[in-house]
Image (cartoon, rainbow, N blue to C red; front, top):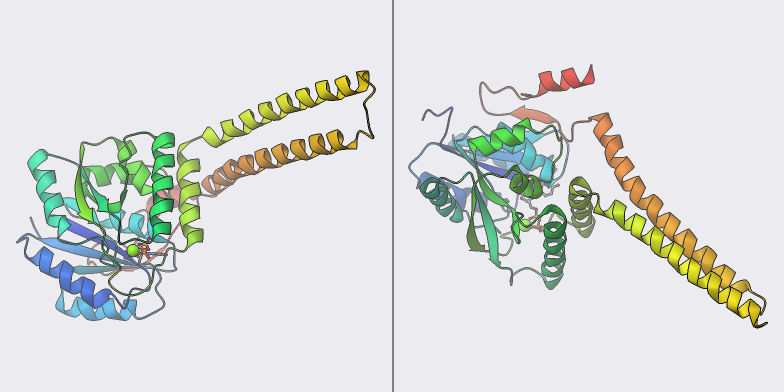
Length: 328
Ligand code: UDP
Ligand code: MG
C-alpha cells in the first residue's frame, strides 16, 4: 500500500477539544504506529473556536499521518463524522470520538476481527456504561430500545459511532443520496456482514461534553423520523381513539338527557372540545415533522462545508460537481 492509500483511516470529529488533543495524539499515535501499517488520521475540526485548530497544526508538523479537515462552521457531530468518512482513503475506516471515551486500543481488535472473519462492519459495543451518568444511561437505553423497534433488530444496542467500516461499506455510504444520514442507523441498514467488539466506555479524558440534552433530543427525533413513518400512524390511531371517546361521550349525554339528569351540559362540551383540540394539535405537529424533512430534502442544502483539507492532491470538495448538478 502506498501512502496515498493507507491500510487504515481513523476519523476523529472534534469540536473545541483543545484540552484533550495532546492526550488523544499520544494514545492514538502509540496504537497506530504499533500496527506497522500505513495509516492516516483524519481529524475533522468541526468549526472549533478554541485552540483546536492551532493544536492540530502544531501536531501535524511532527506527525505526517495526521490529516486535518476543517469545516467552515460548527455543523454537529454527525455531519463532521460524515465529512470525514466520505473523504477517508483507507482500506478500513474507523470512526472514534476525540475525548478518549472510546479506547483507541480497541481499534487493533476491530481490525483483527474484520480481517479474520472477512467483515465489512465491526461495531464497538459498550459493555459497561457504569462510568456514564445515570441520566445518559437511562436516555441511551430508551433511545436504543426505540430505534431497534422502529428500524429493526439489525441495529446493535449500545453501539454508538465507534465502529470500523471497510472501503466497500464507505463506498456504499458515499453512494447514498441522503445528505445527512444518522450513521448508526444507516450503517446497519446497508446490510454488510458485521461483527461486534465489546469495550468499556471510559470517562471523558478532558474538557466537557459537547452533546447537551437539546442535541441528544435532536438526534433522537432525527433517528425516528428518518427511518419510520410509525409516528404518522400514531396520529391516525390517536384520531381514531378520539372519535371513539367522543362516541362514548355522546351516548352518556343522550342517557343523561333521557333520564332528565341534564345539568347545564357544559362539562361534556368542554371535555370534548379540549380533547379534539389536543388530538388535532398533536397530529399537526407530527405532520409538521415530516413536512420539515421534505422541506430540507428539497432544499438540498449541504449540511456542512469543508474549508480546507491538508491532504495533498485531494480536492477539498470531491462532491462539488455532484452538488452543482443537483442545483441546476
Ligand atoms: N463533536 C463534534 N461537533 C459537535 C459536537 C461534538 O465534532 O458539534 C465531537 C466531539 O468533539 C467528540 C464527539 O463529537 O469528539 C462526541 O462528543 P462528546 O464526547 O461531547 O459527546 P458525549 O460523549 O458526551 O455524548
Ligand atoms: Mg464523549
